[in-house]
Length: 355
Image: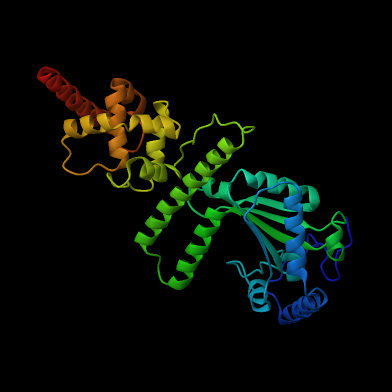
């Protein structure tokens, strides 16, 4: 392993973590930090140029690279962070905090992220790699997504020879993910310690779904632009993208459903073989929407979930009832579907007589 810069060695394992970071540790950190900054006054520019050169040389299409050295007040505050039980997050902050120097790479579409990851992985030692977008999807959340890397400088990059062994953090995200994250941070920061607004949360959730959809559409455009890329794949539906997909397909004609109901909606769509945006678009044709609207005599504008449930019932009939009767938490779903199916049949018979 390359020699690490003075005072920034690997963390010892098996050492009992102190309950808090002492003032002497903070004082030592201050000396280490300010010494390093004085020794490397151009660190941000040098890393920025090196990363840009790597990506350009590899033919990676990106928006921009930005690099910063964390300011001392921010580093000091981070070094003092503690877990709920009082133990220090970073008992050896100079070794444990990896974003003292941080790099952000923004790309135009998500298909460029794996390319950037490969280039950086080949050029540095990867200490840690975390896909924040995947973590968000797994947790059932929306919004912020990026790929975080913790990298260590090797002797492979001549321009960074003075930093051999230095550990730093890289965030890679699309320009839309970046815009969402920056705007949300600004709003939350201004909100302070007050309780989050339910309306703001709902709007952020909708925006997150739209952004994920837009990122997928950018990928599709990039694929069409590049003949060597497979263009047969359609946008896949997910609980995260469904609100945005439906906003695009039906606009504001039908209100958005509750966020937690889109998992239910995805399940009943999949049980009927509808898994892509193009298939959903075919289901949402104007003629069937008008027919279902008249047959059901809605007392309200149906939300996304109710509208599509009825369109599936109209298209697949009893097959839809049998396939989805046990989906969701309503014990009487099968009975309710049967009643709505009868209304569709009666209206169809009525219109047939008129014809």
